[in-house]
Image (cartoon, rainbow, N blue to C red; front, side, top):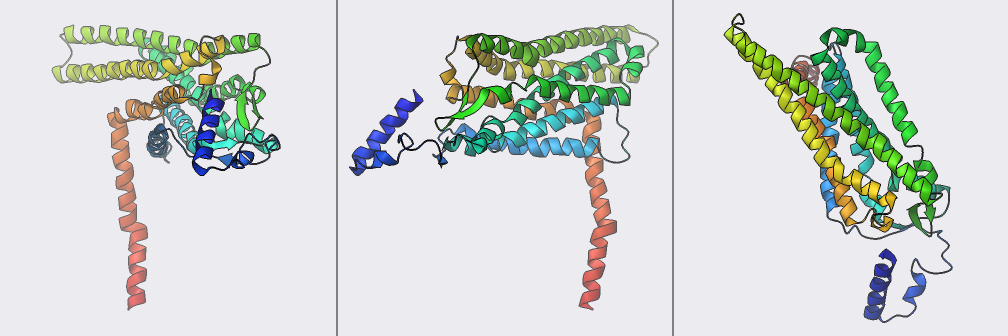
Length: 358
């Protein structure tokens, strides 16, 4: 379908310039052999939306890392996991920035350079890696919050600083393992980056396995953990309200905090499911043969990928911006920069300029 459209476009252009020799310079020349890089304009308007979101995601996730990893900051297990989430989302944002240029390239050489281009730029491995790491980190945060609320006495033993770092290392290791298949099915052929499975059976089995590991299992764990956590928080809120011994101010503060946690957890479930379900179902159905694979990376699929990419921005809003302690930490950090500039570097620059002028 894509080739037919390009041939029709070529015929139209030949009719305008009235040159029969122009076709010999096209990418369909039999003497071409895929040795020349070639590119076309970027037609999809969603690329600019993607780039804007990527820039916002880079700035937002970098800010979260600066706040959570600053010196002399005592980090909890939640802070460490959120920092890892920000790192994964930052990698996702960085990985998508070359995509508009990569998808404008219409002629890829069948060489090592073409294979590297296809696996790391056109269909980037690091994008798949960071996406899976982000989803698994979200799942881990859900488990961590569930244990902290429902089993508080187990929490201190299960999520020590060392164990939390071990969990994070396991997340990245599993993300690499689950995406190894990427190097085996991506190749450059006939001037294009294509996905080629050894057989239809492998495609179906791999598609189902990836859907289960990358979406179905993490989503089920998140939903179950959040439902149980929300139910426990609501139960405790009722107990607090009914307790006559609890002071009114303390009771109000605890209820307010727990309601904010409930709202945050509910937002996590809704945003993740709404943003990721369409793309993951599209990928599953394409591997099962329900949707023809020629529709992959077409406009509809790109829009679904763009919707899923929104989670790289929403994670920061949900986990960081809704947390009053994080907002206070951001203010303290910028105030610290201002004080350091006022009492340190800026003062030294002022002294140097005034002495030089004298």
